[in-house]
Image (cartoon, rainbow, N blue to C red):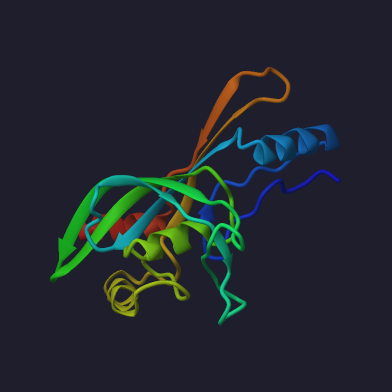
Length: 184
């Protein structure tokens, strides 16, 4: 049936792709399966990311100790997951450091960006499951952020009708933008 082609984690804002017809739905499902849709996210993480850009290529599976969470796994038990990040800006405020990242995901695993960034030591700000309590508390008290700082900012794909490349962008919503402005 036509409808939502992919989903976002709870508390993640941004773009969703919704098909209005069954043929469009089938087209986009096939594109996602073949990794032909480019998906980019903006996220704020705790710490100054080093190196400033990189690739996290680590399989993800359900966490063995907590079935509601995901974690890095070995290649036998996990599903392939690839995230490419680059630093957009760095901030320091009251001895707290943060990096604003642009993250492209090549795969779409549950909690992928959140798990990958935590695994390399830079958890997503505001993330109640995988985040840093001190960074979360600082941003919540200072800027009133009540959710994780993760935003689906861009989708690129070939239009099913015209076969032309489309790029759809979504700016940061007010709650996330106010955090960035406050850190500047």
